[in-house]
Image 1 (cartoon, one colour):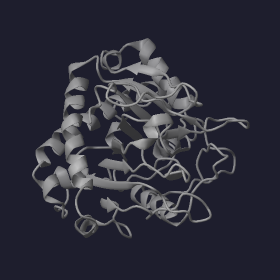
Image 2 (tube, one colour):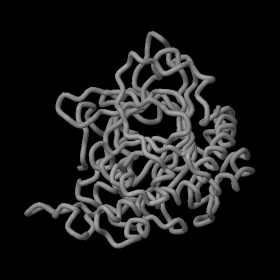
Image 3 (cartoon, one colour):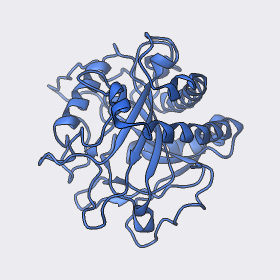
Image 4 (cartoon, helix red, strand yellow):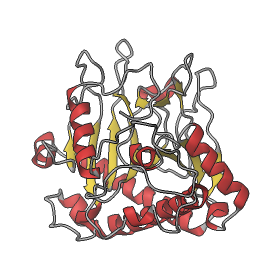
Length: 344
C-alpha cells in the first residue's frame, strides 16, 4: 500500500455524493503564508475538516515515506492470529492496543462495528510511561513509530500556532496544552475495514466526533463520510487525494474556544464503487491534550466567544473526556446521525 500513489487502486467513482474540502498547502503554512493561514482558520470554524498537501515540503515527503513503511507493519499486525491480537485487547480505561471487530456499536440498536484498530501510545513510544505489551512486529519498529510520532505531532503544533494567532492567544498557548513529553493519550492508529458482503453493506464505524484536538488521517480508499452542518444536510464521502492527509478538529478545541471551532460529526462506511471489494487500510495520528488539562474555555483577546449568561462549563480533564467518549462508542452510537454537533 502506498499513500503517495492511488493509481494501483480502482478509481473513486464520480457518481457518489461527496463533501468538498478545502485543500491547504503544508509548505505555505510552514512558511507563514497569511492567506493560507486565513484559509486554515476558516476551515476549522466552518466544517472542521480540510485536506493538507504533504507533497510540497521535505518534511511532508519524509512523513509520506515513513507511512509507506508503516503500512507494511500495519498489514503484518492485522495478519496476526486473532488469539495473538487479543493478548493486547483494549478494555475498560485502556485505549491502547487492539480493538477487535464488533467491539463498538454503530447505532442505538447495538449493531456491531466492522473495523479493527490497533493504537500505539505516544507515551509508550517516547518512554513517557512504562512500556506496554506489544506484538513483536511493533517492538522491533519502535524507532520508526518514534520518528513518525515526533514528526506528525510537531506539524500539528504548527497548526495550533496558527490558531493561537487567529484566536489572539499568547504564542504557544495551545501547544503548551499538548506537550510531547507529558502524559497524554496521543497515539498512532492502524485501521482495517474488511470488504462487506454486497447484500449487507452498512456503516462500519458509527457517527461520532473525535475526542481530542487534531486528527491527521492518511487513507487511500473512500469510506469516510461527513455530515455537513445544516438542517437539510446529507452524508457525503470524502475523496482521498494522493499525498494528502485528511485533517479534522476534535472536541477539545471546541471546548477551548467555546464553540468557535467545529468538531464535526463523521462516520466510516463501505467504500464506493469497485473500491468496496478491497480491504481498506488507514493510518491516523490522534493529537490530544495532556491528561490533566481541563477542557474549558480559554481566556483570549476577544475572539473566543464569552460564556453565555448563566452558562456553567463542565470541567472534564482530557483523560476523563476520552474515557467517557470511548465508553459511549462501545455501548451505542454516541450521536444521532442526523445532527452535526457542537458539544454536550
